[in-house]
Length: 401
Image 1: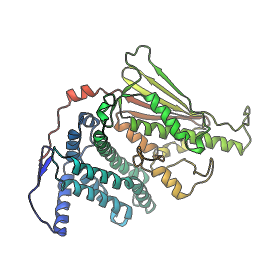
Image 2: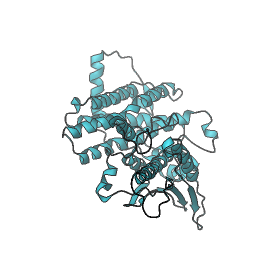
Image 3: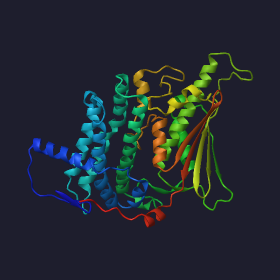
Image 4: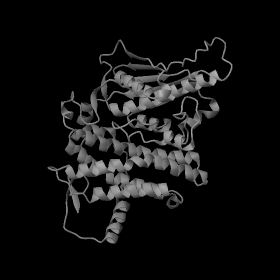
């Protein structure tokens, strides 16, 4: 079968299961040799209709899935780690379904069914990788630094294809085009202040953080011609901000609980009130910045580098502030896939390293400054994106035969 222009025209061929498996393995090797690059945000902005988003998926996802399969197979003794085998088989199944799919511009239903199935099955990938990498580190087969580097490469590619499939699904939803020009995951009037306030609401649903004050303040440069709204991806900005606010709220709770068990510092009211987590949003004509500031005691120099490790977690258990958590709970807090519950259910933490990856993919930066004994200030810097300019300057990428 051969695909041209995003569609597939299939000949009537019958293969045995063994021959199909051999054929798909050869296909995986062929597609992995295409040197996949992350799907650029500009490509998603240009996919302004369901048909264009479908073409992007059919063009890019097989290459990415094949590349990730080979990425797993390059790990030492990967076959002895059940979680890696499961992830590899999940990707291979998705690759096969996409390659055998018959699609036509007039009927996107077959692709839509495959994408819904794919997204459901892929929910387990991130936590499975967490368990797998912990196993490899424990056995001395990979260092923490090499494990983090491997995960960065794998997860960055996953972020791009995840956004691509979500963009397609949201593009198909009825009424999307009527929502103030919104297209898929892209909102041309994304309001970062409203996003931050929603993040506060979400975090305060957790009983552990309900009484932590979390004021949000917004500012626009006096010289700016544009307002605070900008073209962006609100679902992902919400996840990033929510994770950072949750981290700061956790630090505030833990410091207060710790102080309550020891002699209180001079000047302490002893009321047990939590120090606030303050959120500042600022904008000018070129950028939007968000600061999350807490007085949770900061991070010591000795522990600072570890916060960017995928094996690190600071969150207490759901049993209450300061309660000890089990290994399973800590793993869940660190490795719950932030996308698994997008718009469906409450999400657990995705960790600072994954948060930073999302920010970088979105063209921004995430920086953290800590004053030991005082607190942490986290800064998100996001560049304004002009979708019209992107579409005008970026030529379409031809579909591969």
